[in-house]
Structures are given as structure tokens and as C-alpha cells.
Image (tube, rainbow, N blue to C red; front, side, top):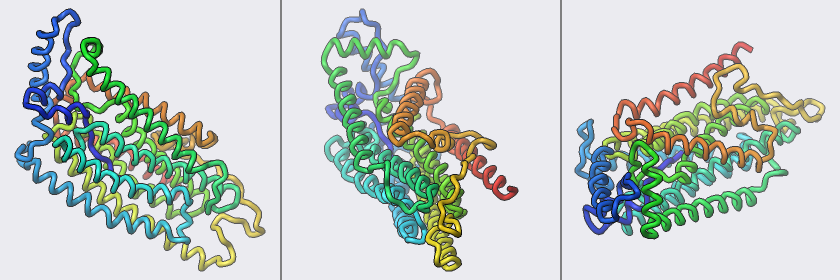
Length: 437
């Protein structure tokens, strides 16, 4: 899973000078009765201070050296090489997963292939950000939000594909596929509308903030309600929703892969759940970088994200290889039976009760089982609501604490790996239950 950095489009537009760029980094907390001229002076001073506190130089100055003694230019080269290297194992993953003996649900396979649209679609966005705004994509919010939405669409398609595969496996079709209640076209149209609405909201908010005295007073009133100033490169709420929903969807997909293994009696599919863990950690790394307002001092976090992407794509490729080999063995053992879970007399198998989360650590992945009886439309609505609430908590909750404004490598890596270790503990516990049962 490729997850990319983002920041506010206002930053990218402030190209006219140092003071203009500094003003774009932060909106000042001011009292409403301060005259406009004094407010502008105060904004400049607070902007410079806010940028300094967050470790912001100018986009990311190539000469900037972090706490590890590595320059931003060096980290950028490392990141680029790792992200490039991650493509080959992902293509291998798609190759093995698309083999007929893998019996991957068609919707899920399409979702994994659609990830390539995100990978290659990000490139023109990044080039445009550099050429038009002289910024990295991380600092052009609207462009980055649009690019990241392709990842959200990918994960939604994977989740819905697994759900249809589970329905097919439960009624005796072995998960091979015919869509009945899910239309990828309908899902795509709904997601497009959601993206258009988010973009319109971003544009309206930007126009409102730039509309003159009324907009300035409204922004000032909102900023004054919080104990700390939010830098202008903080993620907008719609973009946070895109990021958070991607993480939740990926966890749901992990849970669905586990369920698919149990329903189809194909243990190798549980290996895919394990293979997806580093990819999820990569997504957490991207969000962690945003949580610290894309501070250049944490460039190594983006490098770690790239490394986790390489590892995750490789483990997914290995899992897909094992799934294909398992399918070959099953086909040789029972050539007259087309599915692994069909009964001897051809009758549909019993519907299996999935118990993920009932006797184990609770997590977001349990939503796949908790919402299993919901229609796809209802599931998407619930997912959107959960993502909005969680995103608002992260965005505005970060203004109540100090650490997002004080970049710390130790804390950043803890935020990445502590949830990842808990995720591993969950699947390890489930694996041990399977072994003893």
C-alpha cells in the first residue's frame, strides 16, 4: 500500500517571498477587536514562530539535516529508491493472486490491480506540484488529497470484493465470483461523488478564508477557540478522512482475508493477512508524518514508510505464491471438485459463523465481522461516519497537546510500531486458537 504525504494548498500558493510563505504556514490566533493592520503584523510574527516550532524550513530544504545527521536530499533519494523497488514485488503479488488456482474473488483482484492507478496517478500530481508551486506534493493539499483518494477507492474495492467472495463461498459458489448485490460501477460513482463533494468543500473553505475581512474574522474566531495554533500545512478534515478511512479499510480487508480462509477452507489465505501487516504500518507512518505537520526533522519517517512498503509488498507476494501453490495441490487432490469447500453430493456447504474478535484482542479489523450482515451501501455509510469522527478527533485533538508541534523521532516511531505490534499480537492469538482447536 503506497501512502503519500500532504499539506495545505495555501502553502503552495505563497511563492511571492519569505514573509508571504511564512504567513501561509500558520493562521494567527487574534482577538476580533484588533485592527486589521495590527492583525497582519501579529500574523507574520506568529507565522514565523509557528514555522520554527514545527521544524518547518521551506517545503523541505534539501540542505536541511535532521537529528540523525542525514540531509533531506539524501532521505529523498533513499525514499525514491525504496518506493521504486516496491513495484516489482507488487507485480509478482498480482501475478500469483490472478492465477485461477488462487480463487481470488474478482472484485478483490480488481481492487488490488486498481492500486496501480494510485501509484502511477500520483506521479503527475507530484510533477505538477513541483513545476507549478515549487513544492513537494506533501505541501499541496488539494493535489495530494485527490491522489490519496485513489488509495481509498482501492481499499474500498478490495473490501467489497472480499464481501462478495464470502457471500459466494457461503452459498456454494466457492468465492469464484459472480457479483449479485455489488456493482463496481455504482461504487465508483458513489466514491466519485464523495470525492467531488470533498473537493468542493475544500474549495469553498479556501474561498471563504480568502474572501476578505469577513473570512479573516471567521478564521481568527475559530483559531482563538483552541489553545494552540494549527499550522497551515495541517491536513484539512476531508484529507484526514481519506487517510483514516484508508487505514480502517485496509484493516477490514485483513479481517476479511482471514474470514475468507475459514469459509473456503484455504489456510494459505491467512498468510495474506499476515503479509498485509507491514503495508498497514506503512500507512501509519504516512499519517504519523502528517500528525507532526510534515516536519522535515522527521524525513526518516517517510523513508521508513518506503521501507515498510517494500517489505509489505514482498510479504504479500510470498503469501500470494503460497495461495496459488495451495490451489494447485487441491486441484490435483480433487480434480473433480471445483471448489475446496463444496460437499461430496454437490450441495451447498453450511454457512460458517465467523468468530474474529469474540475471543481475542479487539481491533478495527473486527468491523468486517460486526458489519457482515449490512449491505454494501450501509457498510460504506458506517465507514464514512467512523472515519469522519476519528479524523476530527485526530485533527483537533492534536491542538490540545504539545507533541505534534515538537518533532520527536522516538515518539514518531512509537506511534508507528506500537499499534503494529498490537496488530501482530491479535493475529498471533487467532493463529494459536486455530492450532489448538
